[in-house]
Image (cartoon, rainbow, N blue to C red; front, side, top):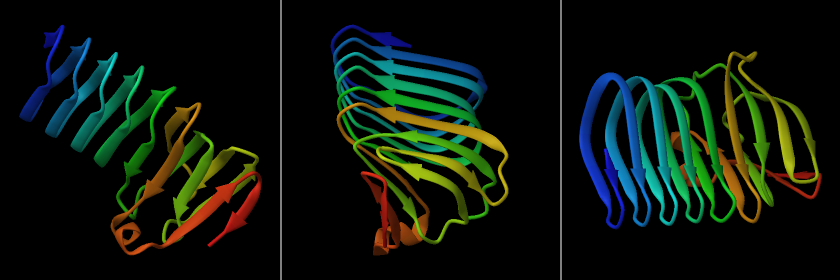
Length: 161
């Protein structure tokens, strides 16, 4: 699916592969179930809910909000915009996070290294790889309790609750 100028909204996708692109507009997909999904917008935000399978999502200028249900490998990038990834509380994953301010929910079992504007480690002993990178904004990894403010905050190499 592709648009040159306009938003994309899809409610429910269940298939082997999804490629969604927009040159100028937001992309929103609810209940994204696919072996492999590639989502990109050049100028807009991306909101994905109920993601299952491998995911590559990127925006050249916009924020990304990703809700993982049963993920595979995940790569999320934007040079200009915040990245928020919601994970199941029992998810086992390796994390590679880069951003001005990196936040990981204190309710997730994170073990690893935090230094400057990065966090590398694992959730619940490690597993599938989740990468998130933004140049000028924040990266947040949360579970449901994060809505109530339970975070481990990493900024300039210092951890804060």
